[in-house]
Length: 453
Image: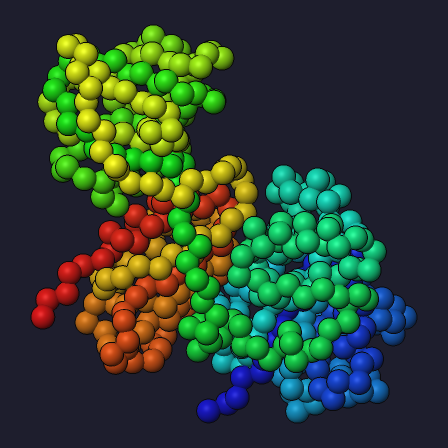
């Protein structure tokens, strides 16, 4: 079987230090034979005169590396490079500063030609500390600029030019990067100098390495902090809030059971992400609505709860009912008992266009057909806004771990180690734009089936 040639993709916004990093490879004393591919839009900087004048030019460096200036299709360029494969052991591709690395990475997943000869080893992103805030301010809401996309797709970030700013600023930038991609490895650098063994040859995109690189569950965040079930008869109730710091959001709906389940939480979450209706003090509160209780600056709130049918009702609040000193009273002024309910990790803020990451871990066997349907619906819903995904899954009737990794909707699956006596769990990660963790969790858990012995 032919040994695959590992490829590293280097990304980073204009001025982040990509060219310096490439120069360090081409001129460094690292003992590696590396082929570096420059494209026609790159800030070449290695030797403009040498690299001009030819569409496909190979320049051999004194340390055994090869610099390649290529134009055209990536598959075609890499195929041409195969003729010189005896001269190198690793390929580094420098993407343009404006490029979204997603389509480049996806090519390695979708091209049978590339899969036969190359493996995507790693993606290295460079970030300019000195101009980070300016880049964020200028480009984070510009769909034409892939600043945050470059961070989201990277396996390793070289936080470059750390010598130009204070420690507190470095830590703040790190925090911002890890918020966008909690699973990335961040290395601080000056002049983009780094031990290549730390960033290359790690097989971070290799399915066989998935189990070793899976993060711990980040815990799904919900748009509410508490949910409970209350049994009510049809009629009107006083809904009194006696301790107010800010306006409160809630949803209220009838359920068949008598407890909060994953499906109930998921339904509540979907309502919370729908448009809200503002209710001022004294107004009626209706079921199946996302309600904003506007207390109009007062310290207490009095509203009327309108219940049309007898039964159990789920209520979800952005604060705990005990903290709100919430009382629900019937017409005879009897207090309706509010149980302990369920507490949730509440999302502090949510912007639909923000790059975020969801890491889930849960038990149970997944039905493969249901999981496939879930993915089809998911990628149809989010289109190209799920950048990365990977997981270690427990499929029904399969005694081996199922490994998968995806870029956009291009997915690769393979079998991992036998489960043997290990506890069978599912671990899965999504990185994308505007991902709603509670919705992803509910969809995945709907794929879980009972195992018959």
